[in-house]
Image (cartoon, rainbow, N blue to C red; front, side):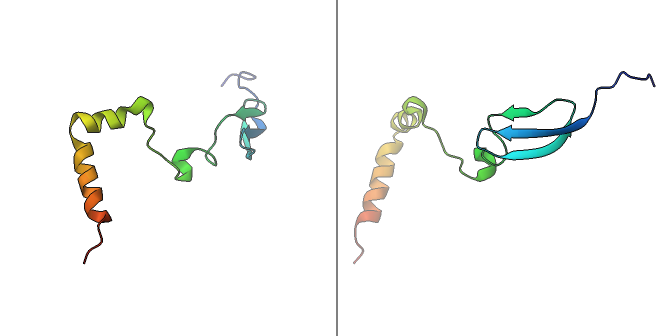
Length: 81
């Protein structure tokens, strides 16, 4: 193996925009990231369906799912007696 060709592997601090600080080792100096496992929606369980420009509503209208959903909501809203 050749000598002096490998980068230095030093302790590094990774700082996220949410304020999370992680200590690790890396060949890079201190890192600043925008999103980490502490604030990422996949890991926090706060995953949401994002309705981009009404695509979901447009799909429901196209296939008549709005009327079916409204009928179903009307049945559950009526008091059973």
